[in-house]
Image (cartoon, rainbow, N blue to C red; front, side, top):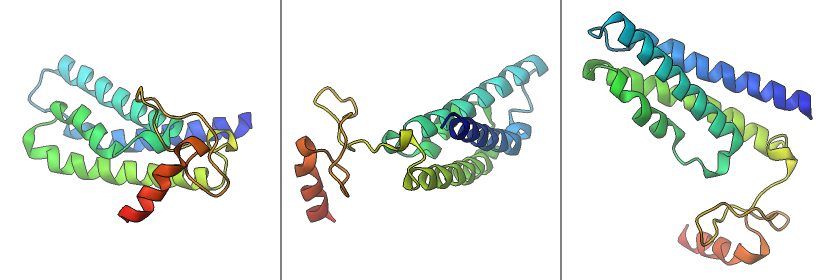
Length: 150
């Protein structure tokens, strides 16, 4: 299992680096050289943070591409933001697909599924869902309302 975790971390590292490499040259060219270096470090840190969060908690990270773009957009001139948004969307989309494959194979989250609901305090429910379901016995009523809404 430790080997799989190391492989997953390596893959997520590669996704974050691919996103960073695709946008690093678009960082504000009018800023001072030292400022550009700081901006690059910040963009790289945000890319890595997003990928680690995606790997750690894929069920509770809604729209990771939008979150990453919102975190890094201030480092780019307005003329480059459309290209940055596209690169982020494509990179995060690929990483999300990879993580979903790992979840479906039961290789992520220790192979143990978690309930998709949140508690009254806003934290993720830690209980195991019913077999073949997304919710635990305490939150099974949420699945019925999700089916009716669809």
